[in-house]
Length: 312
Image (cartoon, rainbow, N blue to C red; front, side, top):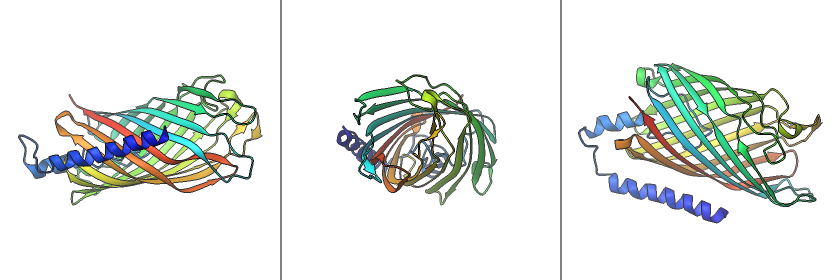
């Protein structure tokens, strides 16, 4: 299953590159080549593929951005194994990111999601599956610097909440269905105009005990990406995500499952200017995996994004 999905993502990235080769000599009808390139750099071209990366750019006033994100993680590699092993799983995460700007420097985002986890047999536990909606996120972002408005770069701060929309019961992920606070600061810079970088630093802080008596704790994350835009339709990038999570508690007992993960990988976007859409794909590989207990983790992460900008 893992090989097929990784191969599919690799074929998709190769297809994006092939589409770029076919489109390299084309221009967008009705517009000069250079102005279109700069405009698309400010839109979909060069945007990060990984759903965890936001940067500091917000959508223009009166426009809506929708992006469907898919993340696949086959956690079959046990790290820091002391002989006791760990339960291996196959995870699929779907997120729909909706972003709308009612003003030049303010954006509202709503992020519903769904997760499916297939768990292998381990110890007295048989193989099973848990799934359900994630705790939906709602946040506001103030872009105190925006490059498209004449500032030297884009910088923004976001504050929001994760709402208790997860389900309760043994068939659903532990620790969900709680209120959490989230905050993030991000930066985006475009120059020359084929280069784009994005960076952000974020925190998520749950406030209560969730499903199955599990209370999650603070999660810090920092992410970054660099993309080179070959033309208005195609770009290649390198992206990185780093996350540190503190130990959870189950029924007031420390689960000792904290840890730090860093993943890096290549990504690609193919833009369809006529429809204001883009398709992105990426493969991410671990460079740091440090856990407090033996932990089942993934050697390859597959990320796919389908996005569209709506205007009226």
